[in-house]
Amino acid sequence: MLEKIIKIKNIGRFYDYNAKGDVSLRKITLVFADNGRGKTTFCGILRSLQSGKSEYILERKTLGSRDEAIVQLRIDGSTTSFNNTSWSSTFPEIDIFDTEFIHNN
Image 1 (cartoon, rainbow, N blue to C red):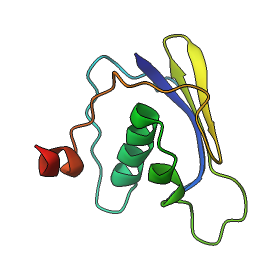
Image 2 (spheres, rainbow, N blue to C red):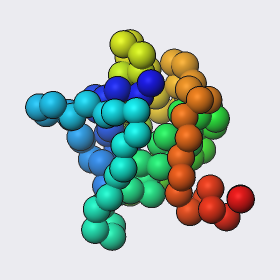
Image 3 (cartoon, one colour):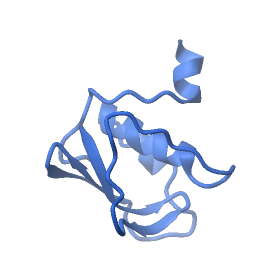
């Protein structure tokens, strides 16, 4: 189970996000925010984690950034990382109910 977002860097609006405090996710987690806050970018990160396709992240790299895209997530007690081109492991069991899901179904 996806337990925590540890770090997201140089992806969309996530210039350098680091978890602070208790930000643990539960079995079902609803993500909501105003427009332009990174929800679609976050879904792209999760879709990349699910499929292993780096383009979901790389097409959303922060404009003007020369640094690599980084994601660190805690899944089932261990850290899974994306470092610029690929994931250390994937998580195909995750379900993402976003506009892409609606379009495909």
